[in-house]
Amino acid sequence: MSIDPFTDVEEDAWSQIRVLDSIILNADIITEELKLDFSNGFQELEEIITDLNEALNVSQANPQQFQLTVADIENRHGVLEKLEKKKRSLSSIWKEKTNDSKRSRPVTAMSNRISQDGSNPFTDQHKIDGEFEQFQQQEMIRDQDLQLDTIHETMRNLNQQAMIMGSELEDQGMMLDELDTNLDRVDNRLQRGLKRVNWIIEKNKERGSDWCIGILVVALVVLLILLIAV
Image (cartoon, rainbow, N blue to C red; front, side, top):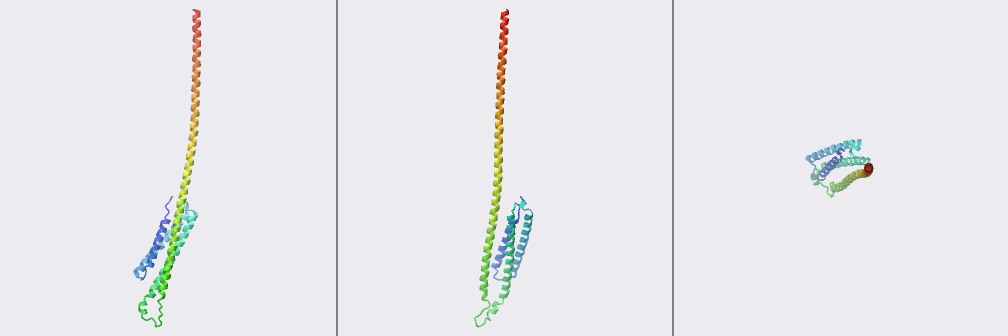
């Protein structure tokens, strides 16, 4: 069976997504260095997803080579769709984060010019942060669901392999039973052959005894004739 790289590459994709999530969550201040980190990480995620698509195309073209069922192929399509959706979500959140950072730069200067009525145009930032945290929690829940799906798929593959091994063991058991039956037949034939050989030997012994008796009788008759003649 050929090595199927899909599972390992998929784990790399989710690992990269967790890295990007961490960058977003800890991005209190958007710096050029942070932008570069996110850009590099996002580009790497895109490359990993491209590799996954190529791996799926290969396995879809030769499912028997990797012992994959139609359900396995469909499940992998679903994994790719979830990864694409997560990638778009990360891109959208990062853009909003960077735009909010640009808008919030003049906050310090403008805070000294808040109008006398007490209104503050930046008080909605707390609401935005709360919504963002809620969104991140939902994304974490989705990630956990995806991980559970992956575990379920792994368990199903292990179950299929166990069934294949069980079937092979059953076939081997049937072959051993058949061999045992054939050995019994050969043993019975050998026993019958030995009985025939013994029977033939006994018959030959009986015939040999009859010949000996006959010869002795003839010899006695000859001796009697000679005695009478003398």
